[in-house]
Image 1 (tube, rainbow, N blue to C red):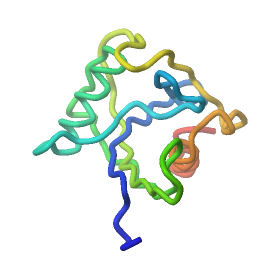
Image 2 (image 1 turned 90 degrees about the vertical axis):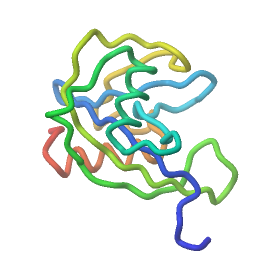
Image 3 (image 1 turned 180 degrees about the vertical axis):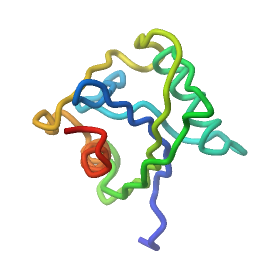
Image 4 (image 1 turned 90 degrees about the horizontal axis):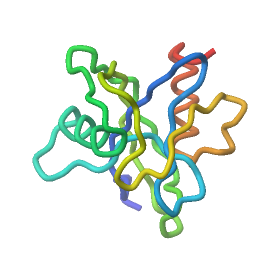
Length: 135
């Protein structure tokens, strides 16, 4: 591998009451964070706000958009040795969270339930703990 990840995605890290929001995409065994790949020409904000709106029917609030950090790890449910770079962001939202599109359900996961998460989501959980979002 040339050092460039195979997948480059953005993710919304939303914490509430000591738990992190995660979603189960249709046909997946583990939980992921809301977000996904950028469309051609999209910046992080545009891609993440579009993905979150598509997946959860909520609108992220632009002035509250902040980078939490970037995680690099093995991509789950992909060919062996596939790596992912996931840029993680926080933001407030408007609306009521509802699973839509390719998302079957959403859950709030505590740090003790990390085994429910795909590897990149586990790394994001660790990042959220490190940055003080989760106790």
